[in-house]
Image (cartoon, rainbow, N blue to C red; front, side, top):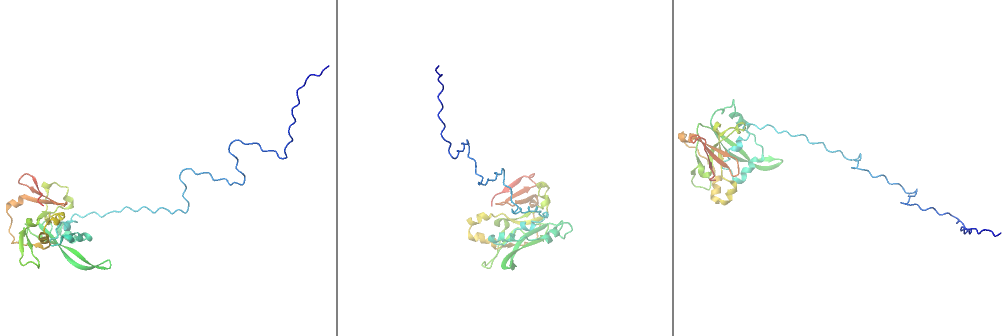
Amino acid sequence: MARPKGKKRAAEDPPAEAEAKAPAVRGRPRKSAKTEPKPPAARGRPKKSADTEPKPPKPEAEYFPEQRNLEDLWLSAFPIGTEWENIDKIKEFNWNFENLEKALEEGGKLYGKTVYLFGSTEPQLLDVNGESKIVLIPIVVAVDCPFPPSDKIGINSVQRENEEIVPMKAMKMAWLPYVPLEDRLSRIDSLKTKIFTLGCTQRRSALKHLKTERVKKFDYCMPYYMPLTPPEEEDDTVVNIMYPLEPPAVHYYSRRTGGVIITDRNF
């Protein structure tokens, strides 16, 4: 009998190589053992090292002393006869006029009296922080008088031959009521003050438009005392009020017209 045909013998496998090949790895290659692993990335804000300097302590709250009732009285008195370019130099130092304030407060010599104040300056050579410097020392003169001591201004200097006497209004000056700090929120019609200061409404920004002779007149101004005569009754019905603005604003409050305020803008 004939043998059935069998399947062909599969081809013999090739001889194995000396070194077997490593099987292929899918995905990312593995790192070798010699490679140092990187530290994991920190999430969020980096931590501060111990060597970081500590924050400076927060500054303590600064407390200002309570303002006195008449603390700015001396500033309200116009320094008559002082050059315009030197007026700001008066504020370089914190001058103290508590002796004047005590005299006008309860228990003082001038308490309850009608007082008119004007200012001036006196230059002195002083030692300031180890340096010699000319300092303008403010002076405040208080006149105890039941009515304005004068409504005139004298203009005189070494260069002038004669003294010139002019009304205060001609030099933009007037006696203005001073309102203490505790009364500045009161109604105008209830204003009862017996302290008046010399005020000037001349705008400093407008000086450059004036003639030199006109500007120099302010430097040569001085108080002029007239014979003490009581004013007419009509003057007692009008109160002048000046607001320290730039330019200054002067209001006239008339008791006779029922509290109508008229603004003077002729500066």
